[in-house]
Length: 122
Image 1 (cartoon, rainbow, N blue to C red):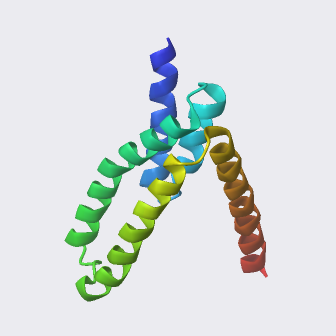
Image 2 (image 1 turned 180 degrees about the vertical axis):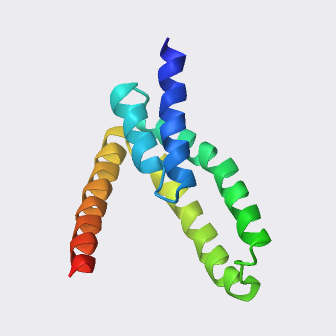
C-alpha cells in the first residue's frame, strides 16, 4: 500500500511538472511531510524524476522550432554552474535547515504568484 502513495506522489509531481508548474513544489512536500522521506532524499528524487520530463519537453520544443540555439548557451552555461553550486550547498546543509529553506522558498513563491495574479487582473 505504501508504494501506491509513492506512485500517487510521483503522478502529481509529473502532471504538474509536465504542465510547466514545477512538479517539485508538490512532490517534495508530499514526500517529506506525508511519506516521511528525508529532505535530501526527496530533493534527489525530484531531480531524478525531472530528467525524463525535461527530455520530453526538449524534444517537443525542438520539433516545434522553439529552441533558439544561439541564446540557449547563455542560459545553459550559468544554469549548469549554479546547479553545481546548489548541489554543493544542499549536500553540505543539514536536512532540517534545508527543509526550512525550501519551505521559505515555497512561501515566497506563493506570495509572488498571488501578487502577480491579482496585479494582472487590473
